[in-house]
Image (cartoon, rainbow, N blue to C red; front, side, top):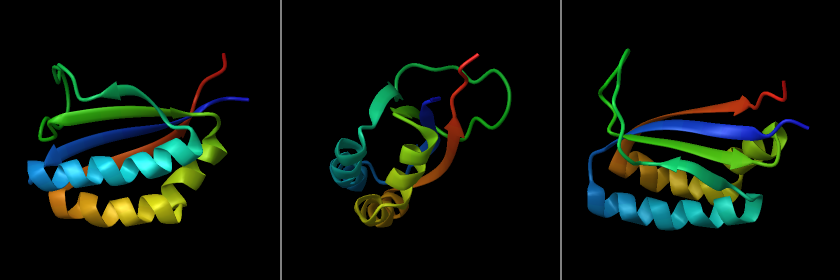
Length: 98
């Protein structure tokens, strides 16, 4: 079964409030087995929108689990905080088993 991934691009507007989001999202990620593959770090945009300053990839056991995590009550609570602290785009995608 292919793994599922979240790919997020984030522009943090309020770093102090964003810390609260990180604490809140950890509850959902722990429950659904989310594993950070990329969490911030050095990067260089070579093409496209460079307005985001933080990039994140989270791996889940499957695409269905990745969707369930995003739709969970735990993550919905974190979204409220995220939206106060940052502008984000999140894509949930099925991995390639090739």
